[in-house]
Amino acid sequence: MQQIRWGMIGCGSVTEVKSGPGFQKAEGSSLVAVMRRNGALAADYAKRHGVPKYYDDAQSLIDDDEVDAIYIATPPASHYGYALRAARAGKPVYCEKPMGLNAEQSKNMVEACKQAGVPLFCAYYRRALPKYLRVKELIDSGTLGPVRAVHILMQQSIKEEEYKDGGIWRVNPEISGGGKFHDVGSHALDLIDWILGPITEAQGEGLNQSKTYAADDMVFGHFRTASGVAGTGIWCFNTFRDEDRTEIFCEKGKLTYSVLDIAAPILLETERGVETIGVEDPPMHVAQPLIQTVVNHLLGKGICESTGESALRTDIILEKLAGKA
Image 1 (cartoon, rainbow, N blue to C red):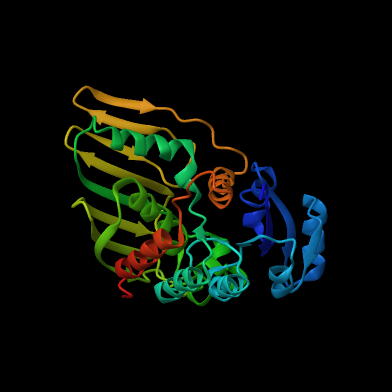
Image 2: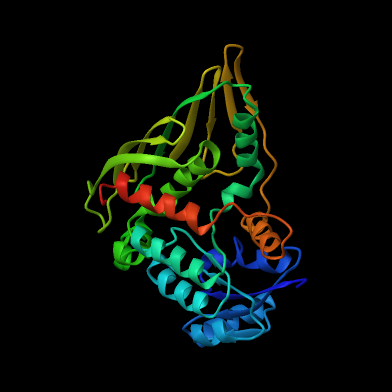
């Protein structure tokens, strides 16, 4: 096989620039079919993006002989069902995050794909961006000495779109599995898993302080990695401003980076002072570098580390930190 032909389930905003075009632009990859329950909207997406086929039924896309692999770009509530159907059809799956509506669903997705003998990947695309590759390189080089601790802070103000006219699905636990902690906090935890190693212990609590929507808007807790790195985190989505930073404390220095601002520089603090480390501008289609690693993996030309197993670990920790496990 020289090319992976993708079928995409879901044509929402995440696919317009962030991910969808990446399947067309990655080497050895093409997007040949899209699906949306509203057939007219599926047709519109296909026309605008130059995709040859469109469907209003997911099973028809999955069963298409010209589709080799499935990208699930819907909200989390439907990830589980689509992943199992793709696995039964013997087709690899690349799924948006968080992977399941809960950790139990994610576990079943991993098991179903394993039994079917098909790979399962998850769209934690920051793993393939230059900024976070640089952070990992700095840690792995050992120049800062052993990692001792990590602290994650995310705070955001409440936006009108989150509650007006019924609000957005991301803060509806029945659709998203949680709130903004699950939506954006998951990226911070996945990066810890990748940079510092799997988190094996976690405890925390989720609170709905503002009562603006159904989901928790505050999560706080502590965790520890398999290598013994101690971690703390506060994810507060009801304050006066937007801010996020992750601080990695090492024996000989500290690294600070933003999870959500993928273009912001890295700060390195040592006894010599504070150094600002610039990073390459992210690509227009920010998921494309990770998509390329998935394509390479499927073509036998490389390995993608953002797997169903790694995403399951993050989903388990999300539940523990939110006090749901």
